[in-house]
Amino acid sequence: MFHYSVETDKSVDEAVAALEESLKDRKFGVLWKLDIPAKLQEKGVDFTSPYRVLEVCNPHEAKRVLSRNKLVGYFLPCKIVVYEDQGKTMIGLPRPTMLMDVVNDPGLKEIAQSVEETLIEAVNAAK
Image (cartoon, rainbow, N blue to C red):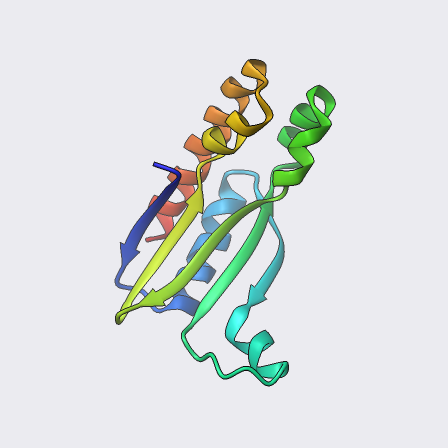
């Protein structure tokens, strides 16, 4: 499956805060957060469903993959989304292993697998 996602009983804001702590514990930092409804409303678009996009990165892993293949930059930083869907809060991410398949570099698979496992651990700990 292209993505990994879990449901949580937390609100979107609570899930984002828990996710930030969980990522920090695993040496991933949040570089940027996008509040999609706020941004769309700022542009005059009526969208009110809570939806956050976090761009996250472990600088050492980023250096490893970019040193091997510059095309990986198309997928960096990693994204994790937190959103509400039909009254439920979801946390999810595209699987790095699936994204690395696009660049067709088998040597990246091991690194992507490690990053994916760490991000899934962070998501599970935050739920």
